[in-house]
Length: 184
Image 1 (cartoon, rainbow, N blue to C red):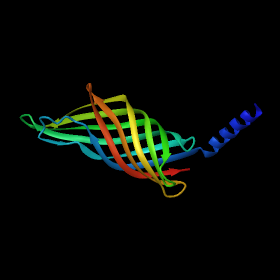
Image 2 (spheres, one colour):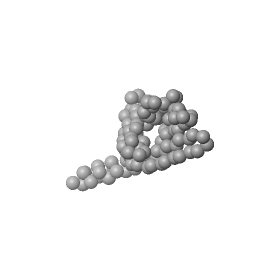
Image 3 (cartoon, rainbow, N blue to C red):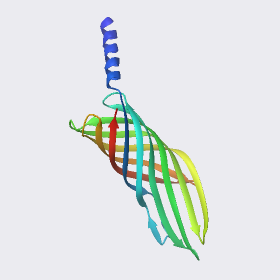
Image 4 (spheres, one colour):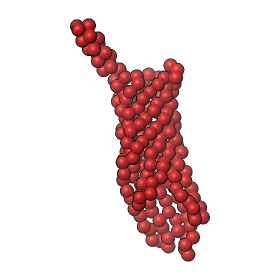
């Protein structure tokens, strides 16, 4: 019994010795799913960014919070006058992250959690603009690669996925980025 308690205490201390706080950011391409039927122009891609912070409990598991700007999709159509509109999606995220090393310097990351996704829509014609905004909780999923430059600094590639919803319509959004992560 004493050996089991000693082993448990040692494992707890080793886990605490590994714990690390980290922050990161990325910049890249985004894609907003938008039904463009009837539009004369439609651009579903944009640029976006993300910022995040995390607490790594051990080499495998961590928890992260973040903010992702998924960019905007823009369209125009003719309805007697030229009408232009856009959908924008951004999200606050909370996720568990699991890491698996592929080599001493390359690690894979999978993230699963929730996104508090804010979807904004606006449409303009003849100087008049109408707009609407909704915020909904949605599932969030991410994949990534981390390349270790130093013990504290890593280069990252990431793909983040969730959904935006407005007026009862739901569409997927994606962000693909490259960035840096720093551990304290």
